[in-house]
Amino acid sequence: MAVHGGLDEAELHTFGLDPTAVLDFSSNLNPLGPSEAVLRAAAAADITSYPDPRSTQLREALAAQSDVHPDQVLVGNGATELIHLLVQAYLGPDLCCVILEPTFGEYRAAAEMAGSTVVPIRATAENKFRWNIATAAQTFRDRCPSLVFLCNPNNPTGRYLDLPEVEELADAIPKQGLLVLDDAYAHFAEQAWDACSLLERNNIVVLRSLTKAHALAGVRLGCLIAPKSVVAAVERRQHSWSVNAVAQTAGLAAVKDEVHVNRARCAVRESRDYLSHELRRLGLTPEPSVANFLLVDVCNASVVRKALLQQQIVVRDCASFGLPQHIRIAVRQRHECEQLITALAEVMSP
Image (cartoon, rainbow, N blue to C red):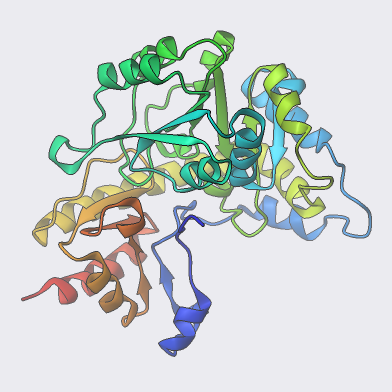
């Protein structure tokens, strides 16, 4: 199973910590939390009836937001469900999946569960976590993958490929292959470009997560936007009532609340700039990021995480990304970030 951020209540119990008293910097969510409109909608959801199995209203709202046909949209129980359904539809034994790493662990977990060959293209700290686009494109041509997974902006590095770079990658995808472009964190980028502008190529799948932009981790909600044939192939594998009534109702309210996302983007920019400055003051070097998190080399992530946990602060140990020296810090509100810096200064002091 892939490792994720978020509070581990069993671990907190071991340390005698109250989950409600812990500051969670391990989950990359909207630092403002859900909007009031979303909370009201969720509370008013009809939980006495079966939910719409096709999430019709939410599907149509997401389609209108992205200027595509509703048949090009599939709503899922978080982006993770949609990743696994994509893999079920397009991968299997003797097929190849290329993953641009280090990145979200569910891509590899899903591909390996399908028995597929996983070919990683790995960026390293030595090259500032930048992939060589020409080398990656050549790998696509050589290995003929059925699926390529690219998280953009990337988790955990915060790197963001521009449109021409992604177009170069898409051009190198062999016939029948698909480039899965996960832009769950694009809402937080200052100069984001629209991944849906690539859909006319017919070899692009866009994954989006309402979990991140609207802080809906507890209800699990994501969407897939792709050519109609891809959506149909994936939807055939989806369980009935995969998206519950609360998620659908909250999601519909979230789609209509762009003001809340804009406010969050401003809050992320302010706190990210503050964290970057203060981390450097402590002698640390956060990687450049356009997203709502920072990757930081602290020499021994496990030791630093445990020390912060004793101060009721949780960060992400990036060992599961193959980065045991790094922690990932989610960007929260400014006053909370100040608490983190105070604690980290104590932990990192000689």
